[in-house]
Amino acid sequence: MVERAPVTISGTYAVSAFGRGVDALLAGVLSGVPAFRPVGRFATTGRRVTVAATRPDVATLPQELADAVDAACVTAGLDPAQRAGAALLLATHGGPATLAGPYTDDRPVADTDDPWWADGERDDAGPAWPELPTLAVRLARRCGLGGPTRVYTTACVSASSAVADAAAMIHRGDTDRVVVAAGYLVEPDQFALFDAGRALAADGAVRPFSVGRQGLLLGDGVAAVVLESAAALRARGGSPVATLVGWGRAGDAHHPCQPDPQGAGLARAVGAALGRAGLPAGAVGYVNANATGTGFSDASEAAALRLALGEQAGQVPVSSTKALHGHALEASGLLELVVTVAALGHGKLPVNAGWLGPDPACPLDVVTAAPRPVTSRYALSLNAAFGGANTALLVGAP
Image (cartoon, one colour):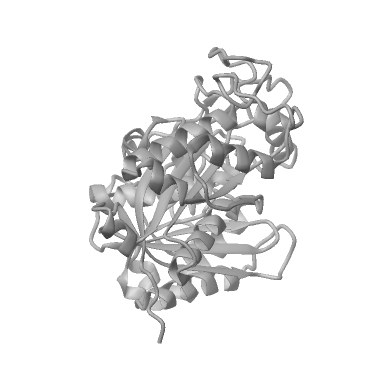
């Protein structure tokens, strides 16, 4: 039997509407006060909804991604040689509007002729708005990462799929170290599409699993995580932030936009994560749910948890931090993984903001009044996307 390499998380970083850095993100979600405010980045005249969780001081998305990767590598304690051997898996929402960045925010962008990097580094071989693979290659070069690159644009499971692939690469022994980065900055095109589709909460609040929930709200999210084999981390004298003990992916094959109402696909993803970790359902002490605050999807996720966790489902604390930092689309999975890891390390579980009361379709132990103490070292971070894609990441405190 081939010995498989345990996967550790050695460095994390995030930018959200709560601020820059993991401490700011954790303090924001533990405060229980959502970060939604009127959008000042672009005009929302004529829109049903005019709020999102945005930061006023963001630069371009490539620049924010580069800063996040650098910060995560510094946090992990990687030297240049260790960076040079690392792969980069990038999850982001592409297109000129997204890559251009701050629109009408107050912060100026240095060298506006080049939306890529604040110091004006250029590669004239590339087009003005390069394709995402080019972004990944440039980002890796900028941050000193010499391994292979890969890009994920699979909607709301982009980042969590990247993490699962990174873990599989390390687990198989293909590589010792992978940096996963993800980014989305709220921009007018996607905002308009979600608003026109009546997916955004008209009351300006995200209320996961709650009676009276009306939908989601968007939010800025840029994050980076360093994953390493336990052996490589020990060899360089590093310490883990957490361990990625299991991961799972599964499809619904039910509907292009709606999840299986029985939650079968997400339940299989959870089961795969638990199986890979060799842990029973009872080991899970917290679920950072995908729950976006939409009626159909939240009920489906509750059904999935009941199916996957059985009798334990009603006893596991659950919350969705999207109610606080917003939905960062392709970056959500990584932002929420960072939150989950930080919460385990800090010993407190975030509240499920916007709560109005229990919904009989969601019979879960939702964290509502105040943060709760951590009672188990294991937590799940779940994500789901259009097309019936589902992911589950199971992390353990070090």
